[in-house]
Amino acid sequence: MSTLPPATRPSPLRRIINALPTSVDRRVIAAAWATLVVQIGIVGTGGLVRLTGSGLGCPTWPRCTPESLVATEEMGIHGVIEFGNRLLTFVLVAVAIVMFLFVVRMRRQRRDLFWLSLGIGLYVPLQAIIGGITVLTNLNPYVVGLHYFASVILVALSAVLVVRVYEAPGPRKRVVPRWYAITTHVTSLAVVVTVVVGILVTGSGPHAGDGGAARNGLNPEFMQHVHSWPAYVTLALTVVLFAFAGRMPRPQRLVLWTGLLLATEVVQMIVGLWQARTGLPIVLVNIHMVLAVILVAAMTVVVMKLKAPSIATS
Image 1 (cartoon, rainbow, N blue to C red):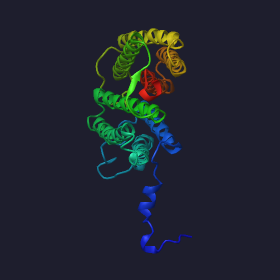
Image 2 (cartoon, rainbow, N blue to C red):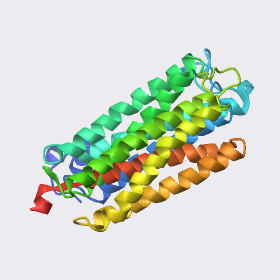
Image 3 (cartoon, rainbow, N blue to C red):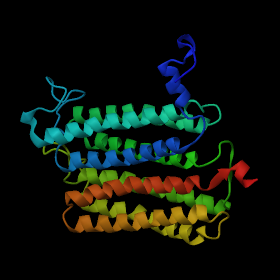
Image 4 (cartoon, rainbow, N blue to C red):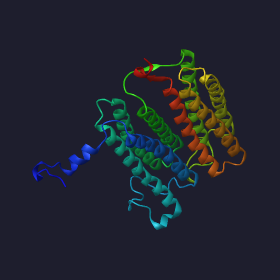
C-alpha cells in the first residue's frame, strides 16, 4: 500500500505515462512487428474484398449506405466482407497509436523511431481516405491501384521500423562495397516496377471488385508478359545479391535476408504462373497480392542492411 499522502500520489494518467518505455524493450519490438503484420494482413483482407466482388458491398463512404454506418442485412455477404475490411482499419489505427505511445518518451534519443511511428500513424487515415475514394469513384481501376500502392508504402515503412528497433540510434555507415549497394538499389527499383506493372495487370483483368466496375482497357494477356520482364530482372539481380552476400562484411546480416528475398520471389513466380494457367482463381490471386508486399518488405530490409550504425562499425 502506498505511503504517499493522497495529494502527492501520481494521477492515473501520470502512472500510465511513467509506465511507457524510455528505451527499446520487448514491448517496443512487439509493437513494431505488430505494425508490419497488420499492414501486410490488411492487404489480404482488401484483396478478399476485391476478389469476391464485394468492392461496392458498402456502396458509399464513410457510411456503408446513405442511411446506415454499418452493413445491413439486405446487403448480404458482400456488405459483410466490405464492412469487415473497413473495421480492420481501426485495428491498424490502434496498433499505430500503441507504437507511437511506446516511443514518445524516447523521442529525443530515438528520433528515427518517433518519426517513423508518427508517419505510419498519419498515413493510415490517408490510406482509409483513398479507400473511400475508390468506392466513390465506382472502383476506378487506377484509384484502386493507388489504394494498393499506398499499402505497399506502408509495408515498406513498417519494415524500416522493424529493422531500426533492433539497431542503435545515430548516423549510419555503408558496410558493403559500392557495387553491391548499387546492385541492391537497382534490384529495389526493379521490385517497384514489377509491383506497379502488376497493379496494371490486375486493373486489366477480371477481378474488378464489382460486376459493374470498369477496367483500364489494357490487354491482360499482353500485360502479363510485360509484368514478367521486370520480375525476371529482379530474380536475376537477387541471385547475384545472394551469391555474394556471404563475401560481404557482416555476412549474417545479408545472407538471411537476401535468401528470404530470393525465396519469396521464387514462390511468387510459381504462384503467378499457376494462377495465370488456371484462370486466376481467387485464392491464388490473393496469395499473389500478399506475397507482393512481403517481397517489398524483404527488399526493404535488404536495403536497410547495406548500412549499420556508425558506433557498431567503428
